[in-house]
Length: 193
Image (cartoon, rainbow, N blue to C red; front, side, top):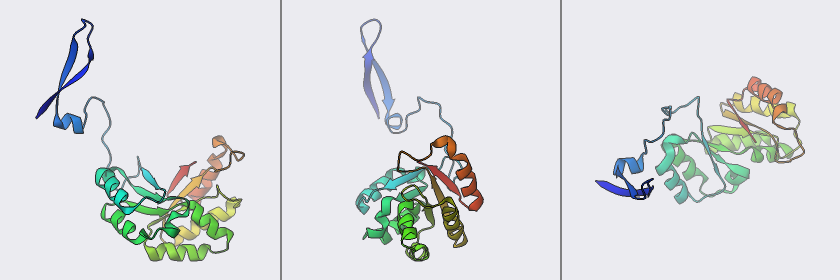
């Protein structure tokens, strides 16, 4: 099937029309873009930040885009209170998307001296990844590296977050040494904030 789409005025004042097939409407071809790598990716990794969406919305997003989503991060501790966490993690696994609790939850566990319990819980519920950050607390860098190593030693894929939620902390040009140290400690990926 074809459609006629008006694309605007031409120089001679007549309306211009373009014939488009249904395929062109769904998958445009007017730009030159590189081929998308397939999962598991080492380049072009993308992640979605879940701020507590219901599983119905998650199903819709995965149905539309799971081929392009690598990691689904449950931000700001939402995984800890999400009553649908188990079904969500199973749904993610069914779509080849790795679930990951956001780093703020681990920072809170660290502040309370409960990092081991955090890792126990994350393994028990089935997270393949964890994020380690220090942007919401005053966690010293050596403690962050210890958490990265502990997560790696437990078999988690580790995302390190570099940056801060506070504007007075270091800027991007100062992140290089932190990124290098996080990789040396065992981080698989580094996310900048």
